[in-house]
Image: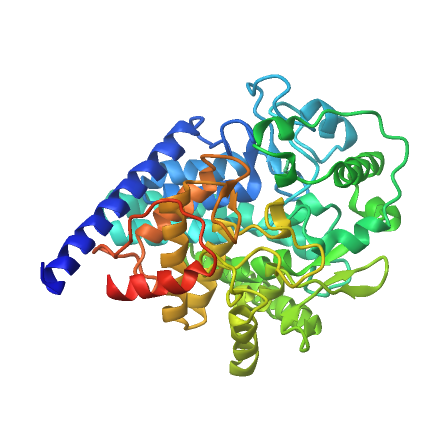
Amino acid sequence: MTSKNNRVVRTETALGAEVQLAARARQVLRQNDMGDWTRAAPNLYPHQWSWDSAFIAIGLAHLGTRRAAKELLALFEHQWRTGKVPHIVFNPEAPPDSYFPGPEHWACAAASPDAPPTPPYTSCLCQPPIHAIAALRVWEVAERKGGERVDEARAFLRQIYPKLLLWHRYLMTHRDPEGSGLVTIYHPWESGTDNSPRWDEPLMNVEVGDLPSYPRYDLQHVANPSERPTGADYDRYLWLVELIKKAGCDERNIYRSHPFLVKDILFSAILVAANEALLEIAALVGAQGGDHTLIANWIARGHRGLNSLWDSELGLCLDYDLRARRPLRARTMAGFAPLIAGRQGPERLEALIATLDSLAFVGHPWLRWPVPPSTSPLQAGFHRRNYWRGPTWPVVNWLLWWSLLRAGEPERAQRLRQASLQQLVIGGFGEYFDPFTGELLGANDQSWTAAVALDWLASQSHGTLRRTATVLQPGRYEPVRGGHTEWAETVESA
Ligand code: DGY
């Protein structure tokens, strides 16, 4: 066969792989669909998680505006009086003994008058605010598809806008009494990157008190306990829960006495980007002028805060421990916070890209795919199979892809998108992956992984939602060292 014919055959096979991937992603979302919200994963996570749901809405936007809107509205029904969006809304029908700590352990309604008083109950924590970004994505997809979807999406934006504003106001006030532009978290679970080495130092200062024994149901749902946080981590997590409950989930009490009080740069950067999205939504729904000024000020404050934590030696941003009064020096994906916040000057952008390409991240020679590990392999405490201590996470890759596009880096974004999709074709819809072998880790059929795949498949390399197909290589799972060089060649020849 001529090389031209070869190319046609390979392209057709690749398109077949893409169609199959989209069908599989839809199936995962259908299987985890609970009517108006989606389980994060079938067994390990049988409830509604806050930032999972936001990513899920981004995927659902491609399947139908109303269902995507419902996903976010269902979550915001459980918003606290303070504006907090809880990190978990508990499914009253989840199988017994499937997740710990469940609603009876949290007992938030008893602990705080601000919590929703009736079931379904929630946790007392929150998670990164992807929601406004997701709501805007629902609008963008509807606008592209046209027809009645546009009216549905506009009605949805009108409904969700005041709730989003209240949520962001909560974060900019209760979680930033210093007016620093940076969000304070009370628990590693709030970061969404639970056992990242980012939290090793502040967790060391948490002295665990009298803790009743508790079950680790999470370990029943993974192939190997080494994929999940350790027992020592969990003791600290649960002790922090006890302290938050003892403080009545009251922000001022927590600020006064809590041992874990950290300015989280990833959370803060997502809030800056979410405020940009909120500003666009404010314009679309015709919000009053005062809102625009308020949100623009939040954005400016967020940028100032992130700037103050830039570490030029590492070429990354650092979290800040309010208790120990010092930055937390860890090389993790969170350090790319300024890229996620957006609107960086050329010098800062260049420094961030250099770090991303370096041996510490995508340039590491042992990577199976050129996708960044959650923790740099050069960081002490890196572990290639353990949750946020090394594995690569498709949703983080989506966030980075989206940020690279906004930063005017379409080729780099396209490479990341292609490699991330290829990883899913071969590895499946895992929660996370071993960065060196590509092995699926954590939960299978993770909803947010399927959701970001659908969004990638619907998007052109330059980020607009596409009409024509791009090319993926079909493949089989085959651990390779230094495999990403081979992959780069395959993409070019496809
Ligand atoms: C878990 O259970 O692993 C979650 O990350 C906590 O929200």
